[in-house]
Length: 54
Image (cartoon, rainbow, N blue to C red; front, side, top):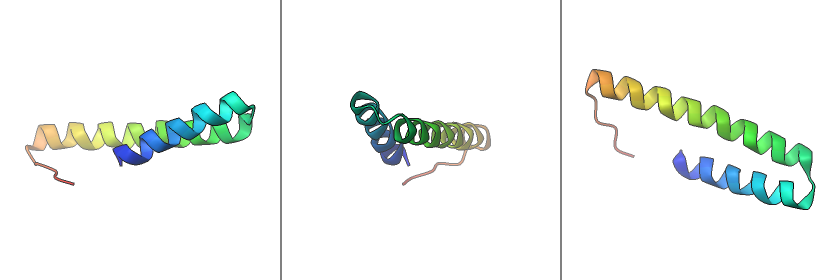
């Protein structure tokens, strides 16, 4: 999932440099949602002691 976040942030950066505001905003928004999901999963795994291997 971290790979998807990096790809979306890269797409957002390139799109914003080229002037595609809609694409940049959409990909940055999706990346923000994925970052939140990853943080929640990491916090839950920390408190429960579950090791998540991907």
